[in-house]
Length: 108
Image (cartoon, rainbow, N blue to C red; front, side, top):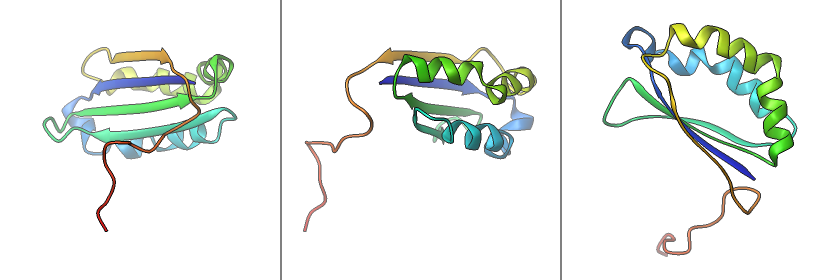
């Protein structure tokens, strides 16, 4: 599985509506064959920072993603919305998705 974490610094004038701005891109990516997850989170410390966690079944699925029309369209408009170049972690990991955390479970 390809696991990717991307940290985005968004320009202040676009941070409040960032999730709406990436909505179509997010939906299209989630519909891709081989996409495992594609999830956005907003920082609790910095209102202008978002983190994207994404995973693809394998390298082929990841390659298809960056070749897709919706990816190319997002890369065309995003430079006007970001404050600096995003930071990324991109690794291949064993597994096929989320697993239960062994150290913690609900009481009762």
